[in-house]
Amino acid sequence: MKKIEAYIRPEKLEDIKAVMDPLHLNGLSIMQVMGCGTQKGWKEYIRGEEIDYNILSKIKIELVVEDEQVELVIQGIVETAQTGEIGDGKIFISDIQDAVRIRTGERGNDALK
Image 1 (cartoon, rainbow, N blue to C red):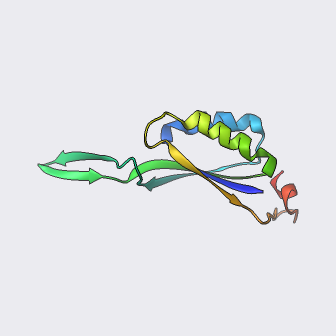
Image 2 (cartoon, rainbow, N blue to C red):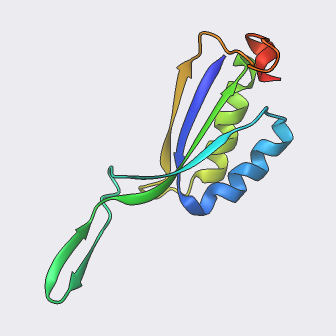
């Protein structure tokens, strides 16, 4: 099992959800986050003072998938979220040792279904 964490532009969320739906994933978690990176943000002048907005709004998507689904999920996210501009985001993949469905006690891949 793998955990996929993707940081994407907020305007790409609905497109990503549409791409994930045909993959029949068990579920995904979506969070609004703020962060900074290469994109740097923007500057504004308020009352003659320069204000540097270097913390930008992003969406974080988390999901745990079976090993066989990892490349399909990554490919779907990249193809959908990519604009070619700085700030498109990043994807992180981690190993998951185990999973447990609390309701039934099922473990491993059975807990994901």
